[in-house]
Image: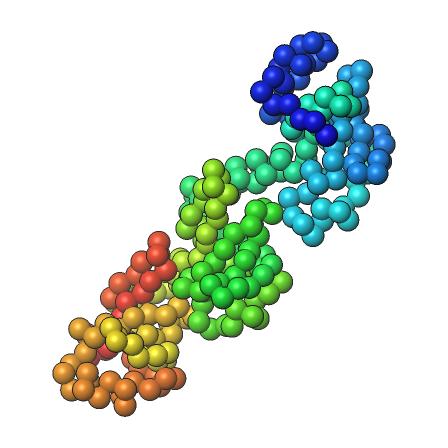
Length: 256
């Protein structure tokens, strides 16, 4: 198909249309074609909805059947000179509205459930409002393997929501910390298990979030025997000294 965007308004004027690219219009689907649908938009020529413009997600792109005679909104995508038709899109309309909801979620700083659709070395691929996003390994919980999350829903918070770059990065840890802050705060004393010893300190498991006990919080004798004292899965009494709900971090010290 031959699409024209730059001179779209002039073409519409020539054929006496009152529509423009980017307009949202109401139409009624009346015919199933080989590669799409014909839509009655109240004009002398029917609009055309290609199959690939139906759904945001690949899983429904070619399997999703629309109901004939159903009336709904469409986004005007382009003008096809070959067929003298307006090219319509449901996908583009859903994309715009999905990002509006995502930006509202980000502005309100609330937690939301995301569908886990894939896994890679760096983290997990998710969907929120049918927009694909990503949760890095560093923002997953330590209490569950990421491979067990596949095709499930996980609570997360939005870290980056950039519509212009179609970039959505989220954090499961931030969501859990926000929930934990209802019960724990700076000064709270709890029991926690060692996850691992690193060069800059020891990570403990605080309700699925790795909490750092920095080396500066240890006595000289503890530093000298750090690997012997702080073996993985050993339990210690710790105190919360810092909570960063924006970055998904907790810092702790040993109870004296």
